[in-house]
Image 1 (tube, helix red, strand yellow):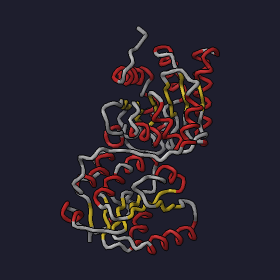
Image 2 (cartoon, helix red, strand yellow):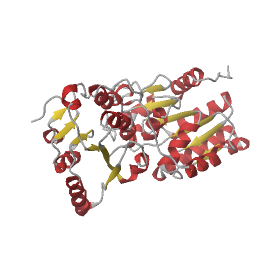
Image 3 (tube, helix red, strand yellow):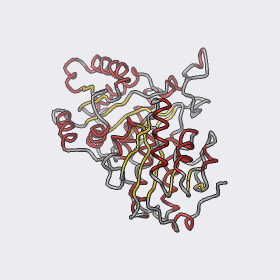
Image 4 (cartoon, helix red, strand yellow):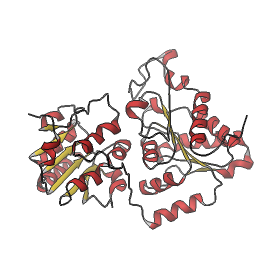
Length: 365
């Protein structure tokens, strides 16, 4: 049966092989990345492996503190599961951290056979019963970034800087330079997509907001997202160009679906500001230190937002805000009311605050 981990418990360990289980999602992986240098400093002789969704491996591969990434095929079928569980057993890990806390990661944790299996208080779907040690003060009411960082605190390294390092190549940097060098500053990167319908602020509102930004701070708008998000991105692009005029179209660039995760990380670090729904790119931009504005509707800016005072989070005020519904349970007038209630004016005021406290002055009355 599990018990609460203490600093004494973990600091007495001398593991040779550590496994970090955090397959998804992008934002959660980003918030976990700062733990790699922590684990390496505390256990310098140990090798560290990370079980991660195959499509997210690009984000962690090449990290100097990571020995290997072990891909999880989410839709790989039974044979892929057997291979993964066999690999986890063969690695003979001494210490496992399950920072996902779901049924599938509980199965992975159990498959390792590690003598010490550590998780968070938020573990659910039976995954808690595969643990024998739970990190204290990691309940759901704590912000996600603080829950993960509690591991660093327990290891006595909570005063380390929360560095997010992505091992991008010279070719990645050259690709980004080719995209940005021709664009006038400031560059506003916009991510209008999200997997949940309840997170997707209307594209027309994104276009209106960025049209105001172009009037206040003439520069460029970069539209980002995955291939699946391209339809919404194209709507933002067309609407924005109509609002600012054809002469300004050269300052609007749509790179949706064109970058790898490593290229995206370089790009997000080099733009001036990021405006995004609550999503993985929002977390990545904020973690890399770029001033970021997050739009929160069905999720909580306190529980799910990034750390840091450089950023601005703006939230809906409907009664069901922060309900974490992937699809809206309401019908009629209440359907997606969170997206309607969060208007452009409130987002515009937040964007002004973001820009002003990070070095630019508003040029409009």
